Amino acid sequence: MTDAIFSAEGLSLSFGGVHAVRDVSFDVAPGEVFTIIGPNGAGKTTVLNLISRLYDIEAGGRMLFDGDDISRIPISEVARRGIARTFQNTELFEHETVLKNLLIGRHVHRRTNLFSELLFTPAVRAQEIRFRQMAEDVIDLLDLQRYRSEIIANLPYGVRKMVEVARALCVEPKLLLLDEPSSGLNPEETEDVEFWLEDVNKDYGATIIMVEHDMQLVSRVSNRVMAMADGGVLAIGDYAEIQAHPDVLSAYLGD
Ligand SMILES: Nc1ncnc2c1ncn2[C@@H]1O[C@H](COP(=O)(O)OP(=O)(O)OP(=O)(O)O)[C@@H](O)[C@H]1O
Ligand SMILES: [Mg+2]
Image 1 (cartoon, rainbow, N blue to C red):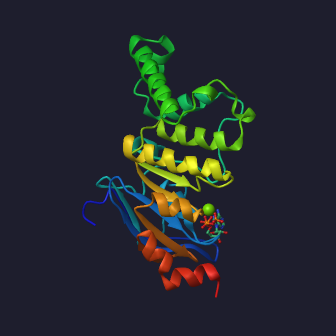
Image 2: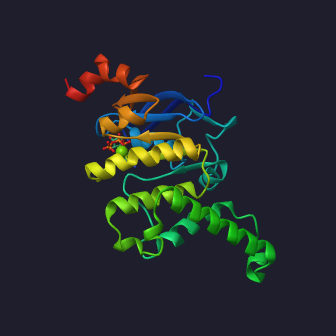
Image 3: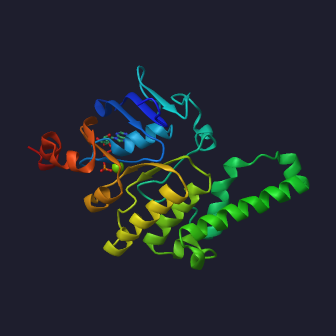
């Protein structure tokens, strides 16, 4: 795919003797919702971990994003390039408010230096106002107004998951990585995921790579689906193709 915004080429990673990810290649088009499915332990989260640079890919593989080779960029550079993620288990500052968590997420885009921040110059003040406006816009987009001043630890699980998405959006990502956005949610909340995913994808314009288990959600939001098992790619295609693919069926039935 020549116009891909993201390409994975031959990604591999082993832990000891376990091939968590083996020779995984795929392309994602700008604006696409690309969903990774597969049984437990298939390597789905590890793919997201490789893209977000938590681990180094093994020699021979590479990742391209927005025209650049990002295979070896420092982890601190990932958000600045426009890649943000959420985790399978939410990771937020538990004793801070929703708004504070969003402002912390936003600080990767700081342009001012420490000295000017200490002096609280007009540039710093202008930047702070922009950050707050950005956070408020994301709060509106994801309908979190009534929680903005609540402490994370006091919020129900479904809301915390939303706050994590909001925090990721505050870095203005071009590429958003979501690890099981519906896990732990009730059916009503899972339906809501479908709506905010569409807002984030269409209105906000983020390309999405998502790991997801809920097949109804997958079928409704995905442009394409990649099925994995045992670290490898079984098939890539639209939902109907993947659902009917013999290798995918046998991976799930465990023959
Ligand atoms: N940090 C690690 N150290 C050792 N082994 C790991 C590590 N991370 C993942 N693995 C192993 O790699 C394999 C793939 O794990 P991964 O978390 O990517 O699977 P997954 O597809 O996300 O599964 P799940 O659906 O359960 O979330 C598993 O065998 C797992 O035990
Ligand atoms: Mg996982």
